[in-house]
Image (cartoon, rainbow, N blue to C red; front, side):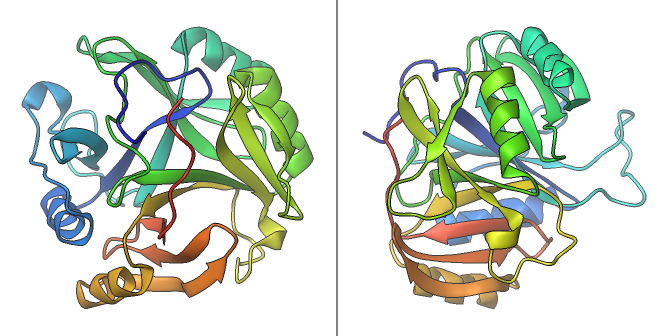
Length: 268
C-alpha cells in the first residue's frame, strides 16, 4: 500500500530532503529522472520546495543559504537527509544527546506543518527528526519515483544499534538471509536497514557514517543511463542483489542516493 494517509509510527523514516547550491537545477533534474513536480516555495519557508509525485508529497528540495538569505561560502555538502518520525522532537533530541549523539539544528516549528530538528547519532551519521502536525510526511512511498528504503551505513554497528534502540525506540535485528545486514523496525514493522561501512563494496576507508536514501524505479539500467546523460555520476554500477537490481549514484550537484527496481515494506 504505497499511499500514506495518517501519521507515521515513531522511528519510521517519514520525510526526505535535499540541500543544494542550485535549487532550480535540482528540481529540473529530479523531475526528468523520477517524474517529480515542484517549484520554489514561499519566502516564509525559505523557498523550500515540496516535490510531488502524482499529486502527493514525495520529497523536499531546498537551496543552501545562510539565515540571512545569503549563499554560504563555501557551500555545504549536497546531501539527502532522512527524517525519522517522533511524537516529540525536543524530548527525542534530548534522548539523542543523552545517548552520545549531537543536536545539529535545534527544534524549530515549521509554520503549522510540524516541528523539526537535525541531529547526528553516536557514530556521526546525521538525520532529521519530524514531529507531524498538519503535514505527516511523504504521501507516497514504495512506488517508482518515490522512496522505497533507507539504510544506515555506520562505522560501529553495535554502537549504532544501541543508540537507535535507546534514543528512538527502534528495534535492530539480524536480517534473515543477509549476513552482516540488520533490519530496523518501528512498531513491529521493518522500516530500514543497517550495516557496517566496512562491508560496503568500494566504500572509501575514511567514509563517515551516513544514511542512504533509496528511490524505487521501473528499470535500474535505463534510469542510470538517463542520470549519466543529465550529468550525474555512477558510484556503483547496476548489480543484482536479494531485493532487486540496484545502483548507487550521484546527482550533478553531488547528492548521493541509491535506485532499485524493488518495492519495500508498506508504510507504517
